[in-house]
Length: 78
Image (tube, rainbow, N blue to C red; front, side):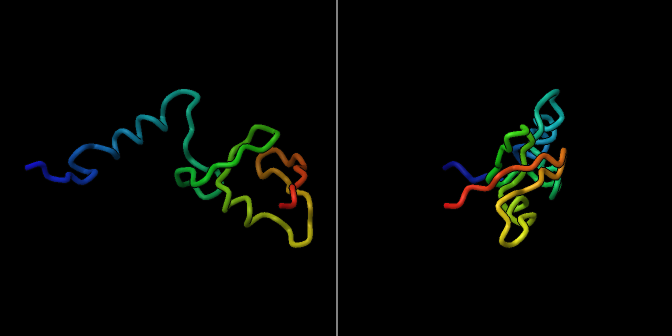
């Protein structure tokens, strides 16, 4: 009978470290410093977690300033 192994047994922590350290691949949000959760790519090509971006939106504003390059990004009203 097969047993369920936890991530320390199968080495997921090491795999994540290896993936994030590969050249050109970055799975870490520069705002929260955690792995991307629901990542969003801005027109300036910077990527952030959706929640991180939502926390930056000024109430009653229709523009977001990219936290990396300060490019203004128009927000779509859904």
